[in-house]
Length: 132
Image (cartoon, rainbow, N blue to C red; front, side, top):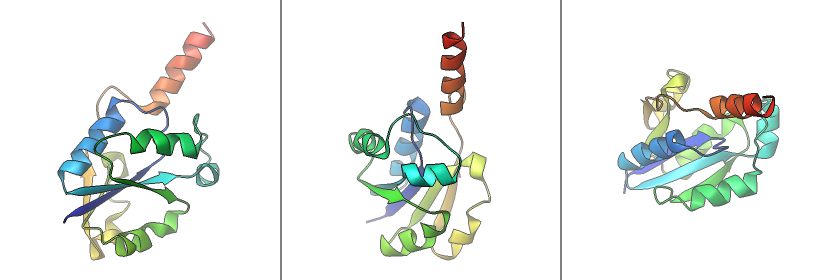
């Protein structure tokens, strides 16, 4: 069985997220999503609209996702790859090169982002509607 892992906050889930998860799952037989905890998002200076528990519930309902684990630190990736017998590490291409150090442990794939959608853009749009 070929195992794939990806990481993210997955807040305000949209079709770009679903596309990433679908393409990641197509690379293997089993997809693990390491979901940033609320505490880790605070370290990254990110604020998710939904709590970790609610984001996890949403991800677990997506047919491409086989397992959701917590992402608590930047440094846990090597341990996750080794502990979960990961064959392929996947991230969006906006992170290209950042995780190449994992090539020592597994294949690293950077997938193109879905054009025309992002959580940041959704938040901007909602703010502009609110502020009229």
